[in-house]
Length: 163
Image 1 (tube, helix red, strand yellow):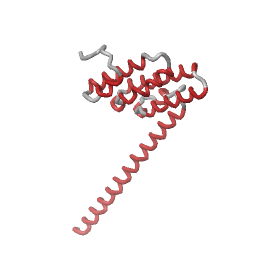
Image 2 (tube, rainbow, N blue to C red):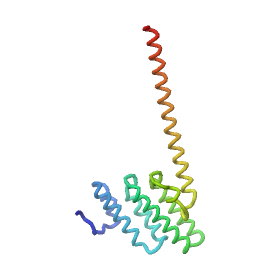
Image 3 (cartoon, rainbow, N blue to C red):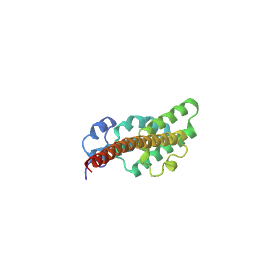
C-alpha cells in the first residue's frame, strides 16, 4: 500500500520524514532513488551531500547501512578511475563526511564493509570512537561502583553499631 512508485522532489523529502516511520522509510527510499539517478561516482557524492541530511540514520537496519557503505565504496571506485588530483581528494573528503554521519558502529563486519577504496582512516576513526565509548562506559561504571562501595561501607557501619 501507500505511495510506492511516487517520486518526491528532494526539497519535499525533509518535510516528509517528520511524519511517521512509513514516511521516513519513503523519504529514505526516495533519497536512494535520487542518488541512483546520478551518472557517476563524482555526481553521486555531490548529490549525496544534499540528500544525506534527509535520511534518519539512527533508525537504519544493518542491511540498509551495509548497502549505503557499499554504495559509497562503489562511488569511490568510480572516482578513483576517473578523477585526478585535487578534485579526487575533495571527492574522497566528501565520502568521508558522508561516512561520518552513519552509525558505523552498527555494521556487522566493519572491517569488511570499510575495506578499500574507503580510506583506512575511516576504520581508524570507528576504532577510536568505539574506544572512546568504551572508556565512557567504564568511567560511568567506576562512578557507580564507588557509590555502591560507599553504600556497602555505610551498611556495614550501621550493622556494627546495632550489633
